[in-house]
Image (cartoon, rainbow, N blue to C red; front, side, top):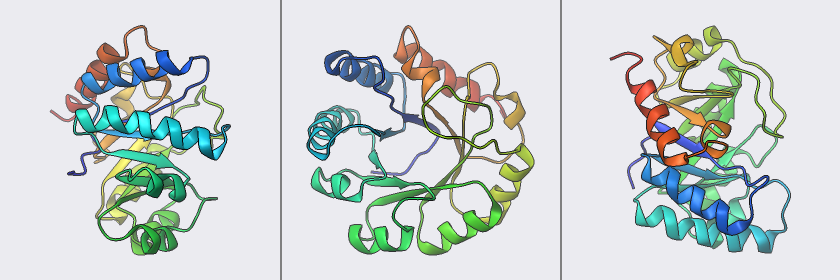
Length: 209
């Protein structure tokens, strides 16, 4: 599958039962998501595996690569298209050795040195942020748009902005040179994830259009 980071959806199952969660994931896929990361912080490995298999069935139908947050073992077990690694997760270089050349490996970077290190270690794309404060349970440190631009200029791989992004606050990213945006709450908490994903993607594509 081709790596297209334009509309990168990161899941958050908080507050949803499994059936509703899967319905919302599929709805988002219908809205034009180009990359999907399954992020689970508080479940057992077996639960993670079972959920990943079900989500993978959905993303395959829509031709969307599935990335697993943090867990290289889970990604390999369900034959996901890749993994996303934070600064405290397995090093990119080791993940690449375990997963092979064909899998997608993304990394979180908040500074130019972190971005350079991840790229040189074999990362395929970078997630940079948080641009705005977020409502997810993940610990966030705000990243300036100037830093975002500097990272874009420092590495030749796709760079995505993340953190509190909504369709009506993307203007700050205009001219930054990023390849796409990441969204969690803007899609996950929306009344209609399909509409939310489509509107967010459209808002981003119009930034520099």
